[in-house]
Image (cartoon, rainbow, N blue to C red):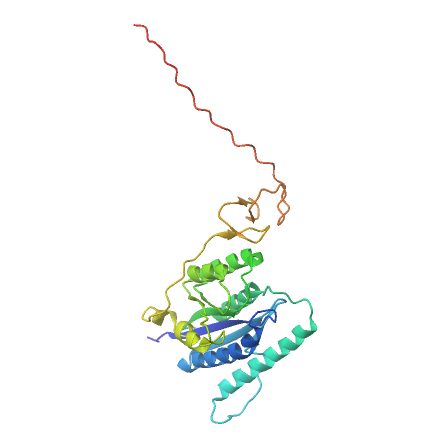
Length: 295
């Protein structure tokens, strides 16, 4: 009886938005740490596969692999595949930065949800193209220093539940901010969320590579046997579509399920017209009347 071949696919989403606060560290130290982390994943076993994507405020694209991979030769005893990966990633990131410098429409909001959607499509294609007797274990790692984006709330929710249904684990490494929505995605899919701690007197991204290798490199099966940082308390409040703020209670559109903190007669998402809510009737307590019963 033939044994089943298990393969591990890691999709890395790297945020290269130039509007990030730690943009210099992200484009230098974070890129170097990501390359070393990727090589470590490939070095674990020959059945490990890798895909790296980059996103910014205008879109997302694949850095590795490319349709036409450059041919490289062994340099200083380095494995050819590692050299090919490093050169390809650096060339593609340099090309993206050059294109972004010509575009003046950049903003602080990175399209991480778009990159995650592309990552799920890539994983689904790999599932279809796998050979008989192969089992693919896929997971996604997001590395970002951008703020949380409530405008992408619906996109995030669709991605999280799709990943949960496909059995894909989502990991998030935040470099600067607490990301509430991505915390929900990690909790729903069983992944790890980590905000890199910043200690006084040290660079902002000190120890980034150590955290990547410690928390995000082990496979899901091995993680249960390791001592990892305790899970954070996840805030499952929804973000309203009008002010992009988390709310405890609100109004939900019965057509498109958009959430609003205040009542609106017209849904700004699907333009459905609603009637004004009737005032809540006040229940008056009935006074008890004493009645003499005649016998």
